[in-house]
Amino acid sequence: MGIQFFGEFLIERWVITRGQLIEALELQEYRNLKFGELAVRRGIMTPEQVRQINELQRSTDLRFGDLAVAKGMLSPEQAREILTYQKNNYLMLGEALLELGHISEDVLDRELAIFQEEQARYRPSEAVAVPEALPGAEVVRSAVDLTAKLFLRVAGINVKIGAGQDADGPPGGDFHLSVGVRFVGSPRVQYLLSVSSEIAVEVASRILGQDATRESEEMVEDAVKEFANLVCGNTAAALAQQGKEFEIHPPESLDSIPAPAPGRRLVVFPAHVANGAVDLRFMCEEA
Amino acid sequence: MSRKVLVVDDSLASARQLAKVLEDLGGYEVVGHARNGAEAVKLYKSLSPELVLMDIIMPMMDGIQSLRTLLKIDPGARVIMVSSMGGVGSQAEEALRLGARNVISKPFEPDRLRQILDRAFEAK
Image (cartoon, rainbow over all chains, first blue to last red; front, side):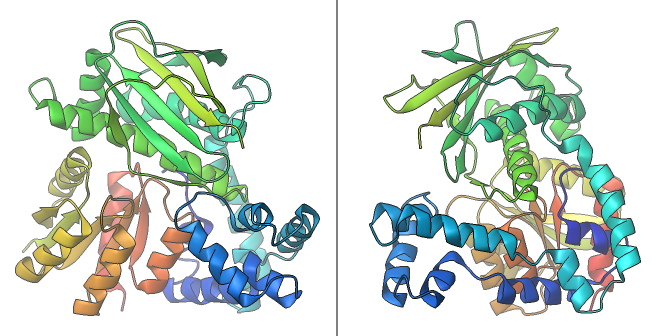
C-alpha cells in the first residue's frame, strides 16, 4: 500500500460507498471556497480580475494569491488574510461525511487512527539533512526519503542516502541514464535521478516482474522513468496530506543533468548502493 | 470467461507490469494498450473492453480529459484511474466526481488490485 487518500481508504474498508464519498467531495467543494471566490466576496477583487488570474495560471505554476500579488491586484497582507481564512475554515473530508450522516463520530475516530498509523511510514523523515535555506526543502526532504523507501520496496535495492550539499554541475562517474520529474507548485523543484546500467536493469526486472537483461533500451529506460514517477507522485501525495498542493509532470529522459543557472540551486544527496551507482540531485528554483 | 481490459498508460513498463499482474491474478485479459488519451478513445470504440485501467498523468490528452470523453461515448464505461499520487489531489477527486469507479495508488499490491477490480463489477 502506498500513500492513500482517506476517502479511498474508507471505501476499501467498506465504511462508506463511492456514492457517499462523491457527496462528501461535493459538499467540500461547495463549502471550501476558492481563493478568487473569497476575494470577490470580500470586495477586494472583481470577477473580471479573477478570470484574468485564472487565465494566467494556465501558463505559469504560480498559485492564485502569488499571481494576484505579483499583478498588483492584492497586497501581500490581503493575500495572507485569505489564506489564513481558507486554512481556518477548511471542511475536512471526515467532517463532511459526519455532517452528511454517512459516518458516526466513533467510527470516524477509529478509522482515522488506523489510517494515520498506516500512512505514518510514508511521512517524510526529519532525519533527511538538506542544505540551509533551500527553496522547496520540504519537497526535497520527502522525495529523498521516499527514494530510499521505494528503492527497497519496489526494486529490492538497499540505498543509503547521505546529507544533501550544494553542487555546481552534473555527476561524475559512469551513469547509464538520467531521468527527471518536475513538481508543479511553488517553489519549482525538479527531481533528477541517474543510475548505472546494473541498477537500471534491476529496477526494470522488478517492475516488469521478469529478468530485464534482454529487454530493449527503451523498456529499461521506461521502467526507471516509472520508478521516478512513483517516487515523485508519492511525494506529492504525502505533501498534499499536509495541505501543500503540488502536482507532477510526466517523467522525462535527460541527456545530461543541467548545471545550476542564476536563481536556481542544484543539490546532491550522496547515495551508496552495493552493486552499481545511483546519483540523486534536485534543481530548486528560488521563489 | 476472462474480462476484457484496456490499459491506458504512456509508460510501456507500467503497462507491462499491469498486464503481468492481471495475467497472474487470472480472470482478466488485457486486450489493448493505449499510450495516450486520444488512442484510448479509438481503442475503446474498436475493442469494447469491459474495464479501462487508465493512468492520470500522461502527456498530450491526460487521463482526466480522456475519462471525460470515454464517459461521453459510453456513460456506463467502467474506468479505474491509476496514479502514483493515489486518490490524493484535485485530479483524483475530479476523476471520481466525473464517474471513475475508483483510483488506485501506485505501487499497488496484487490482492488490493483484485479487490478494487472485482468491486468495479459489483458497483452500480
